[in-house]
Image (cartoon, rainbow, N blue to C red; front, side, top):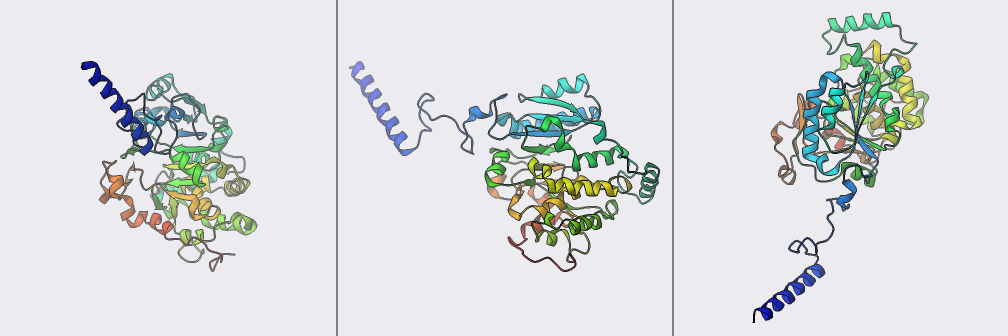
Length: 375
């Protein structure tokens, strides 16, 4: 009798398994009978094992100093817990001096993913020959008297220039197509259960951001005029005429300071490596504003992205909870809130200074006419 019941139970179990397979419901099956595990993107999870080639050639790119080790470990713990512990994308650490053994050991211990450490070439972190360093020093002093942030810092200017025109040329990124920029002390407040790199590749997105702000005008007094001069000489640079409406409130005459906050960026390196962007950066670089003023890489990137990329090629990662002092992006949708611990009421999108996000979303999908004042 016991044998008969056992045989009957086995028959019923196999019948239920067959029915569940036909209906697509395998959640109740034993592991041996279940389908192979996949991510929310439909990718086999084995593709994300450490030291296995990922679905996208991508990496976290981190420009950091040895003295920022603790803040870097904090940021890594955040990104590992929220995303990379499952996806295992590699890290590329860059520094203008050699990394210490302590920095290498302690950051390597934070992740199962591959890490490489590189030094910035001297020619990418020094004054080019056309810069008058005496005049640059006088300009820094004048900005200090005006109360400009980082007015006296030479290293800050080298950093902005490097991030504007050189990071994507580093040999450690030669085999990388997409990058995710991470900085020390940033926080991620939401679980990320999909692959943002894969999303960008599948949808043709070239640039992604979480927060868009207005720049401090005293740091970039001649940036817009310089960019307009470049466009006048290179009209083919502009592929997105509606971008002028985002960058300017008066038909292109002046710059309103809108930019994507670049301490968080997920982008296509092909965009920065394009002949158009390289020509644009070289023009800006020759003008000297990285040293005579304090041009940040964020407005430099943003002007290029707004004018070179179509609206749909720039993506707001609204569902990624992110904090960099003093601003945060906190998802507002009820679905996203289930994955987050941040306060949506404090999200930057509610503030005027960060209103550039909503302004970008409100742009028309197509614009075929140059605004008044733009030649």
